[in-house]
Length: 416
Image 1 (cartoon, rainbow, N blue to C red):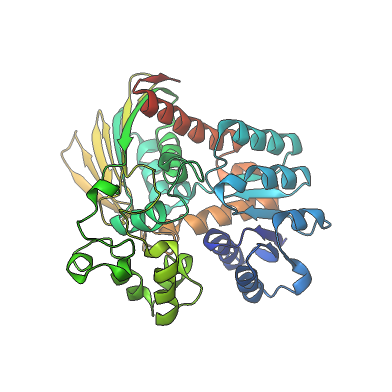
Image 2: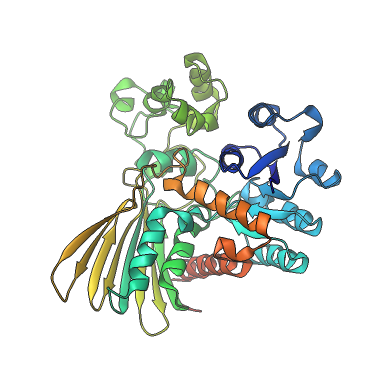
């Protein structure tokens, strides 16, 4: 059976899922919906779609007779709930980009629609689906670490990625997207639940916008990098004038992050975008308010603990994790895992053969392809278990995010 898929939202994430589905050899993209004619044309060209299979928005796609087995919903975060509910009610299986929705009531509406209609459902928690994660789960299941006592987990967002997406970009304001912990790091809290396999019972969190603020603007800096005095711009690590032109000529980087800046991947197109668009603004003169660093502390049933740190002030790399057990220790960097056995003192290195990088353009270390393949197989076989998670599992990670945000806002420990 060849699974047929429609794409609702043809930005970077929608295009990535479409390509991964086609690359699986088990699926075919048969329709696309997006308000942007250029993005529609890109998907149509890559997947051989005729004009009558291209729609200007998800509503038009939903109004057409059912034309696919499944739909990928990769609209903006605040536009997830209505298409998810509508397509579930129409009997489409759903691959929904993370986060599910900005608020708990909206996320619960999606879960109710999925369960009411019995459709296959996946959320874009791609970290679950990497070879690295599978290897780490195998180590834990073997018992060689003994009883797990605590976990440390780090998300190194990357200094330029923070400036691109969360200072200048579409996820810079809570009111228009959501808190950083939801829009960027719901991946990570979901992953911790997946790895630890225990019920969290309490959460505390601290975090703030420490650097990308007006008071940290260098004296004499202009509102745009292209107009900034060279004595200031040349020493700024967040210079758009230096960063974005340097991406030209690299097809992967032209897709992302440059594709978010301009559809015209020429020196003239980039220059125009930096003079006129949001990505050319000084990082100290934007309307951003999401945090640039945050820590989350978790307690699980039985007294086990975990900590999660998200920070902008790193290179963009794979997540780093340490696991502390009664009989052993493990630490991983998204590609290799070092395991120490306390009983013998011996160490070993597990190579997961992860070659893909950590960024969106690199497929999140193989997670994008892994999730898409699992979803296609689940649809083909009508078997939700192929995904290793259901709507309730997806919701659990989101509930933990919202609890952590309540803890951060109130500076209290929130019981779960």
